[in-house]
Image (cartoon, rainbow, N blue to C red; front, side, top):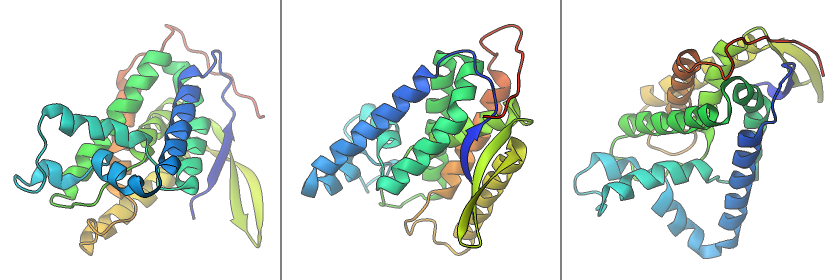
Length: 236
């Protein structure tokens, strides 16, 4: 079971405008999905990431480079249901605010979309020939988690854990919460490849792995928004 993060203890100095904008846009796009009715499947196949488009010469005919690139970015705003959306937005809310404060709005959004793009590429590579669409912000958000992992390893995460018929809240080190999360993604992705079920639908585990690793790299490479960064801890 993966612990459910609720908050962190990093004192932020700026308002998380980019994180809020991403949450709002993702929610509005999902509401639009709900309004499509019977057209939803066609919409998802049009804008989801389908590996066969990129790996089979005769599987899918795309008229332009834009027809290949646009679905990668649009798919980051599509979700398969309320739980999918709420889970992703919760992780983005908890970890995105502090990363945005550290990097600034522009570099935060750059990290988000580059991580999502890298996640999609790894998913395509490891699922070559699959005609199943992949959607969701998980790959991009995994990049935020990766950046948080290297930027605030000593932070504490208020976490909900289901134990003995109740949810309990505890404070866990970010390095433990995110390290455990990444380990689960890696092991599940390895298992999916081992049993040759990676093209059978379900969770795009390797997209999460690719996004996280990209976020780690960018979190180390991108300079903070201020020359001197002072981290102050407090418990909410």
